[in-house]
Image (cartoon, rainbow, N blue to C red; front, top):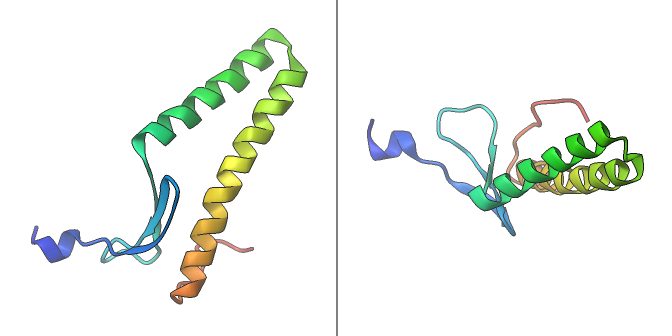
Length: 92
Protein backbone atom coordinates (compact mmCIF):
# COMPACT_ATOMS: atom_id res chain seq x y z
CA UNK A 1 0.00 0.00 0.00
CA UNK A 2 1.20 3.49 -0.77
CA UNK A 3 1.45 6.14 1.92
CA UNK A 4 -1.59 7.98 0.50
CA UNK A 5 -3.69 4.82 0.81
CA UNK A 6 -2.83 4.70 4.52
CA UNK A 7 -3.70 8.35 5.12
CA UNK A 8 -6.01 9.30 7.97
CA UNK A 9 -6.45 13.05 8.28
CA UNK A 10 -7.17 14.18 11.83
CA UNK A 11 -10.48 16.04 12.03
CA UNK A 12 -10.47 16.79 15.77
CA UNK A 13 -8.52 16.01 18.92
CA UNK A 14 -9.79 16.21 22.48
CA UNK A 15 -7.71 14.83 25.30
CA UNK A 16 -6.99 11.17 24.60
CA UNK A 17 -9.38 10.87 21.64
CA UNK A 18 -9.20 11.92 18.02
CA UNK A 19 -11.59 11.80 15.10
CA UNK A 20 -9.82 10.68 11.95
CA UNK A 21 -10.96 10.00 8.42
CA UNK A 22 -9.36 6.89 7.00
CA UNK A 23 -9.08 7.47 3.26
CA UNK A 24 -11.50 5.26 1.38
CA UNK A 25 -13.92 4.89 4.28
CA UNK A 26 -17.36 6.48 4.14
CA UNK A 27 -17.37 7.74 7.74
CA UNK A 28 -14.72 9.05 10.14
CA UNK A 29 -13.39 6.90 12.96
CA UNK A 30 -12.67 7.57 16.60
CA UNK A 31 -9.11 6.89 17.75
CA UNK A 32 -8.40 6.36 21.44
CA UNK A 33 -5.04 6.30 23.18
CA UNK A 34 -4.04 2.79 24.22
CA UNK A 35 -3.79 3.64 27.90
CA UNK A 36 -7.26 5.19 27.84
CA UNK A 37 -8.64 2.08 26.17
CA UNK A 38 -7.08 -0.10 28.85
CA UNK A 39 -8.53 2.13 31.59
CA UNK A 40 -12.00 1.86 30.01
CA UNK A 41 -11.62 -1.91 29.88
CA UNK A 42 -10.75 -1.91 33.59
CA UNK A 43 -13.77 0.22 34.46
CA UNK A 44 -16.02 -2.19 32.55
CA UNK A 45 -14.42 -5.08 34.46
CA UNK A 46 -15.14 -3.20 37.71
CA UNK A 47 -18.79 -2.93 36.67
CA UNK A 48 -18.92 -6.66 36.05
CA UNK A 49 -17.32 -7.38 39.42
CA UNK A 50 -19.77 -5.06 41.21
CA UNK A 51 -22.75 -6.74 39.55
CA UNK A 52 -21.41 -10.20 40.35
CA UNK A 53 -20.94 -9.29 44.01
CA UNK A 54 -24.37 -7.65 44.18
CA UNK A 55 -22.99 -4.19 44.99
CA UNK A 56 -25.58 -2.26 42.99
CA UNK A 57 -24.54 1.13 44.37
CA UNK A 58 -21.00 0.67 43.11
CA UNK A 59 -22.30 -0.80 39.84
CA UNK A 60 -24.47 2.29 39.27
CA UNK A 61 -21.55 4.61 39.96
CA UNK A 62 -19.29 2.67 37.58
CA UNK A 63 -21.94 2.54 34.86
CA UNK A 64 -22.37 6.32 35.11
CA UNK A 65 -18.59 6.70 34.71
CA UNK A 66 -18.67 4.53 31.57
CA UNK A 67 -21.65 6.44 30.18
CA UNK A 68 -19.90 9.76 30.75
CA UNK A 69 -16.74 8.58 28.99
CA UNK A 70 -18.60 7.16 25.99
CA UNK A 71 -20.80 10.24 25.83
CA UNK A 72 -17.68 12.44 25.59
CA UNK A 73 -16.34 10.26 22.78
CA UNK A 74 -19.66 10.37 20.93
CA UNK A 75 -19.95 14.15 21.28
CA UNK A 76 -16.47 14.68 19.86
CA UNK A 77 -17.22 12.31 16.98
CA UNK A 78 -20.55 13.96 16.14
CA UNK A 79 -19.26 17.53 16.38
CA UNK A 80 -16.19 16.83 14.25
CA UNK A 81 -18.17 14.85 11.67
CA UNK A 82 -20.78 17.55 11.24
CA UNK A 83 -18.21 20.35 11.16
CA UNK A 84 -16.46 18.84 8.12
CA UNK A 85 -19.67 17.77 6.39
CA UNK A 86 -19.94 14.06 7.13
CA UNK A 87 -23.33 12.60 7.86
CA UNK A 88 -23.49 10.41 10.93
CA UNK A 89 -23.55 6.65 10.32
CA UNK A 90 -26.58 6.37 12.61
CA UNK A 91 -29.78 8.26 13.40
CA UNK A 92 -29.71 10.87 16.14
